[in-house]
Amino acid sequence: GAVVSQHPSRVICKSGTSVKIECRSLDFQATTMFWYRQFPKKSLMLMATSNEGSKATYEQGVEKDKFLINHASLTLSTLTVTSAHPEDSSFYICSARVGAGDEQYFGPGTRLTVT
Amino acid sequence: QKEVEQNSGPLSVPEGAIASLNCTYSDRGSQSFFWYRQYSGKSPELIMFIYSNGDKEDGRFTAQLNKASQYVSLLIRDSQPSDSATYLCAVDTGKLIFGQGTTLQVKP
Image (tube, rainbow over all chains, first blue to last red; front, side, top):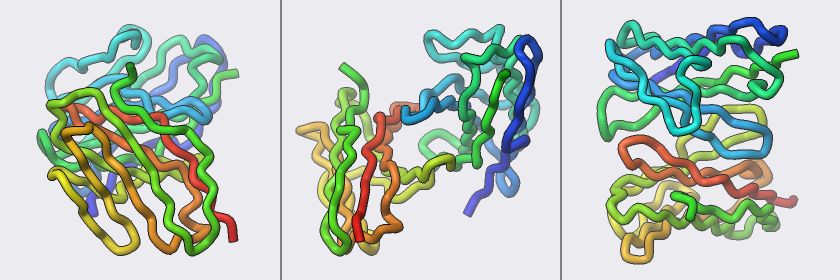
């Protein structure tokens, strides 16, 4: 099956710093990638939809200036959490799909802890 | 009203029993429905998808869809302790919208 990787798997950073998370589709080209955030014992909340070569579409309540998304190629999307604060500590998960209506393949997630 | 609703549980069943997980959704135009399993600290993994009304079976899993009533269910037959996890219902509205998940506990 299709494989999506994320890097890093875990990251700890200090409050006020920025953190970049990479999402890669390893064996297919992903027209669209999605970024989710999941707090403990909560469900996945979609943050933004990223299409290759265009600006990301953010969900209501998600600050686009704080969560910078770049989808520079068909196999790579990055999420940068700028000026991170402890409340940004969460499990960030990306997913990718080839095209509309296709199955989404999930990455293994990145655990972010902001101290 | 939430777009996708699930009972958070926990749902506890004995080993070997049938576990029944339910999900309702609000968008009548939704066409694709998914069940994911998520273990603690891991990302979701797809169990089944269903597009048409009726039942779809895959091994011990059966997904049921009733578009008129706007609900989707997942039956797990011969439940095993390894099935203990959180089960997420998701509806594709152009993007996947997840329910809050139902925690299933299968007791040996």
